[in-house]
Length: 64
Image 1: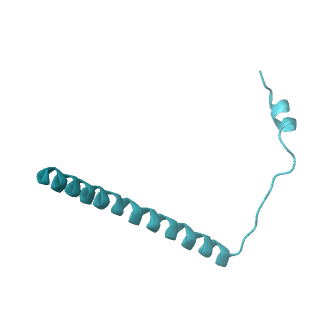
Image 2: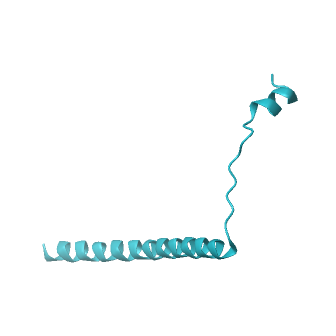
């Protein structure tokens, strides 16, 4: 069982801290938003493509 003493001295004394400017934060948010938008576009295309494939398969079945 761990004591408070173990937790205090077992943790790393040095932790990484990254400082970024407000403009960099905005740039990161913009990039993340663009990634989300692209993923939504891909999700929208998948059902449309699947529908087109199904219609194509049905047309081929009707011809045979």
